[in-house]
Length: 266
Image (cartoon, rainbow, N blue to C red):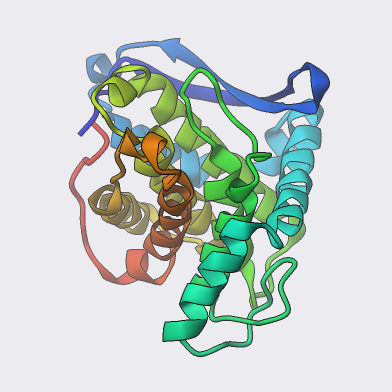
């Protein structure tokens, strides 16, 4: 699907642009992975397994918290927007309510619908974060998957933040490696790559082992899709919300049960 053989993940850096607009940049180095016999999928799996909150720089920890809180704030701000209201109306017509709270909304939903609505609200007013070097919006894909992957489970705040950092880094690393070719070929990078970030975040939350993380990335790859044709109709929010809803289960229960050991990211 994509060639990241010359890319090696090193560490993560969160940055804020002047004027409050958010941007995350991922430190990458061109180091041929194939020369050591290690493929990109194996590197991503190792990264998901080994990243530790305690080993992150204080600056990174600060901005990880800031991105998480800011994205939640954007979800709440966007929850009364036209798009979020329309999405909820569609779900109300075809699906029963649930027990899971949705940011800024009175009606509760099941976990997947709540994740979908949170993502729609987060991107619907165009205040979510962006990574210019890869043309993606990480927060709206990663944060809903992390929040609802933690719902009703005894997840420590530190583990939640680890999952957010992992999701951002995996998504932006792939975005950096495929930009601008992916967009020039007509694909929507946030939708195509967001599912991997969401899956990586959920995999950490659920404590998946090596094979299960490979399963999660494989399932995510099968769900990876989205065309840039939305530019004429405004359907990019649907693409973003689909990414977080598909990636979350891939990194959770689905990753535990379905075996998919192929190197989908190599």
